[in-house]
Image (tube, rainbow, N blue to C red; front, side):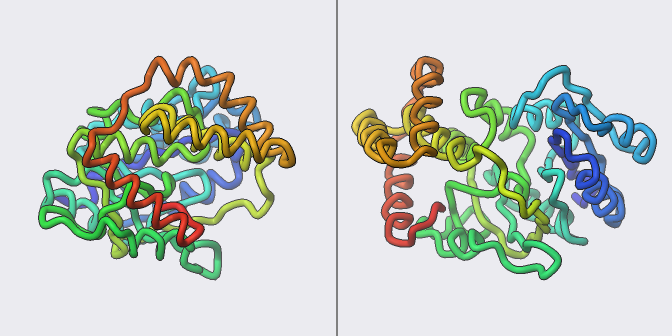
Length: 294
């Protein structure tokens, strides 16, 4: 297959100028992939912009902010076998989608491909690239690249059938650090998740920090533990966060929001199969040593 077998889904909310830049880059790609923008109830004129300047783009005008679940709405609306995710501040390098399609074609068990990400006008490598490339999970004979259990959502390509098989991003998390849970769920169903550095994505994030994001990421990291990891592990992580909350306002917010969502997480709890839990433990050890997350 070719780039034409890869659709692009962009979830956005109130980022019209950045979204316009992203769309110009993607629509300029050779072959012009089909693009779906899932708009999370923007109020900044995003929908007018799309109707006026990008009539060739399919738009899902969502009635409320669905966070990362908007990506699933976008995937459902496409019929391409593979789907590349972009955020409203990221896009794909020329040739990247064709390369990704070729890797999926050649490796039927591949469920998700994590690209190499270059950041900003200086095209600096994202620090996560090195972490993914040196994952201690190594290679598998039936998969390309290096096996991982994490990725950047704005620089990932999925096999549509695999993504729908696991239900996509999880509703309990909403948004922020939602990638690990999807990687866990894919691996639990037997799908491969790998880092392939010859597939390139560009990311131009807003330099202004997003208010509340550190707490949200910590909340979702802990909720992921309650959703999929052994109970002693989840309890230990909760105790650690509670200890930090005594002195750290971000930790206090994360703990408070975790407790509010914990009943839903417990209701959806599905521990990882032993082989995936062993892989997750291996990555935990590596992350502790490196001070990073794979």
